[in-house]
Image 1 (cartoon, one colour):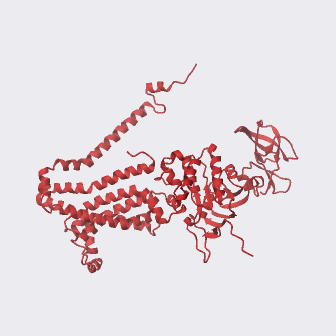
Image 2 (cartoon, rainbow over the protein chains, first blue to last red; image 1 turned 180 degrees about the vertical axis):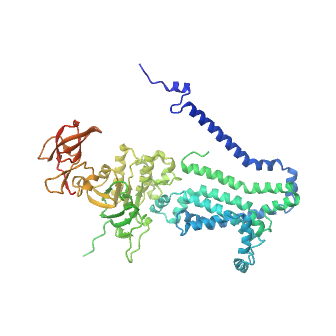
Image 3 (cartoon, each protein chain N blue to C red; image 1 turned 90 degrees about the horizontal axis):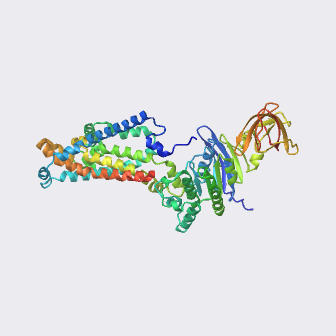
Length: 290
Length: 325
């Protein structure tokens, strides 16, 4: 009499129905290859951080950052980046939302305008900013009327950081809002919400993980902005400028403590934002957070 | 003499869709339940979305309790969706994925005194144990229950249901349907269900509108539209399985419904048909046979006993409606 083999028999022979032996070997090999590739990329990306730690000594850090006023560039960079980030959120969030909902005329042209600073070399942006907000420019003249100068001022530093970092936030926010089904917003308004209420109660919480990622990227870019900054805001000296000047004057050992300072100041927010964002994405997607 | 009070919902609309223009004209009183039945893409959802304010009209007006909610009438303001007192259950189901089941159901409840309603609804929907679960973790059937609960908990005078129970187990549908009807009646509301399932339409509503290619072809009682279709297309849509030429006129046809056939010649019950059996196959607990009459017209019938292929059979179509070509 023929009977069906129990499941245990199949397991003990190592035969998996539907997968021929050669296919299993190929699948295993491709998994190992993918893991190896991931490890190589991961090590390559982390390499500079490892070198930074390796080449720093407590003595060199104390010598560079110990003197009074040595942390000045840090406070300048933090202040300018925070203001630039605030401006991005204030102006960039509505723009990103309207773009994501297709409510802007000539949307493709607007998108191109947002991406343009990304495509241009930062040095070129710096040069063009001098024409735009420098004392010789039309806008510069208008700014002079309200006692703002677009070259070598804190204001100029904020503007330069804004130009280098804003596209990262706006494009990130655009993707975040586009990922929220507009029908869910409509449901909220049908249940009695005003459009702004629906935005606060539904759209913002659902887009928050993506917004946080965009904000974190923009923060890191603003803190590290250098190309445009060195042209329009050599002074007041922010951290990237300080690294460059220390490198020129004292070489690598003089620059590395400031590089560490920049990494320590710029990275926590993006890392926290990434972790929070991953946790919330998992929560909304209905799976347990890692 | 005072003017007649307005009906709860008055619809006269024309909406442009990609492939068809959707046209509909009907009105509902408090307590009325209308089902709009048709195939996919016929324009059913468009009618609901127009009433809810999610689609613009090309022409016409929609009024809720006499207030203009859509369309253009000089001197009358149009109400925003949140003021229309309309609740909508959509297909595919949309929930707030970051909120719990309880928060979803209670989303539209503004008064704290109405909070008890949410707890009651959760219980009747079988969702009490899932009250703390997030929308994103639910199965299709559970999502539909939550969406239904969210609509029923809100303040509405018009309830719009787009295939609300399609993913719910058949065994649980009756209880949910009853809950929907009870809640609707208690609020003095009118309801519209759109579906492509005729039995679902009949179970929910007292009237059915048959829609095809954007046109509301016939509106009538839930049995009337099946027993007395006004056109061949309506007959096809409500399940007639064939048409045989009538003696009444050249362009008149008897519509043969597969379930309204007796397996013998009974002229007092309807029209006696003779033909040869082309095919026989199981159909649930019965058999479905395709028969061709002497002029070659084919029709389908459902019988308790199978007919042998090739044999000649005589059956009676019970009072078959007459339709045009």
